[in-house]
Image (cartoon, rainbow, N blue to C red; front, side):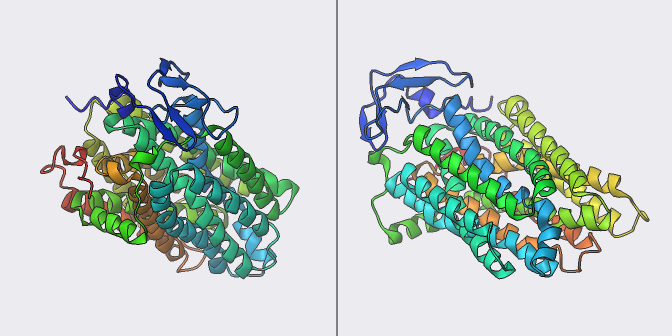
Length: 465
């Protein structure tokens, strides 16, 4: 039988030591109560330093914490996808070529990659709350400035800052999940987060398309600023500390670098990290190219593009829920991951054959179907690569999460400009990037993770240095 996946919270319910942490009280006398999410929460006294704030123990994640973490993981697709229908308009409004405007996506992605390298180790040293709140405040400021940027160059610069600050939500949300869960339960929780955060790609392009009916592309950044303000308040009010002071790292930059070097030296961790990052790059090739492919090549309206993007996101959500509620606990995570990578590869090859004219002139429907299959299969690839990698890194969840996120966004940032290398009138570069990334992800999974030889190895956490 596979590991039952009981969370560390459940395993430690019999004895919960009292710890004084910033923003969370872990009382031995705490009592468990059920939540709407089906995950027990523990009611404790008011959190020290947060007047009047009821706490949920750092070892239990209730419905509220699930929603907050879902909001944090939804912020990147909100920042990216609401903006997608406006890319052609930005090109005209700022009198910039399409390749330059696509750099606004690349800059945000690059910022999210590099920011995680800083925020992840910070959260291991100072806890999760403080770096997260700081990042959210800077995100709001940068997004507001994007709304008034007069040139493409300035927009690129503040999209970079927006990404750097928004990285806090990405890396810390994963670290919080690692603080709370182990095993298959972590995979289930990641699939639940995919359900919540997956709503963002569904509604974001639709919202973006509707905003464009009443205002211009700058109004999209105004909406994102409001979303950032609301999410910052929710984090400040309801997300309490999950990393006790006794478990934090005390070293400086050198210690953080040594920790990351140790993680990268682990073949299995690195294998899952790179395989997941390459799969993400295939996804982001679609994200960055689809506005031009769907609207410019196939003549669809911004509203049609938004609808297709939403349908694809629903496919990703549905498969993610099948993974979390049906496959996890019945099928090994490696088998589910292998299936996801295989389907992504087949869909990418089919897209290349269609866009290169092997089947003659094809319309939007066959291409949209191939993109739907590719994006849906991400529901198997992404949660399982994250889970398998993080299960080896109990002692440094923030740094491990930073490496996972940085790798994903850096490889995605490299893939983004390549999809437009042949101009706006062909979708072949998008398909080529997807095929290369998908096949490389499969090779990395087989050669580095070696699931047939290292069965169970991913469940053995690395020793703390």
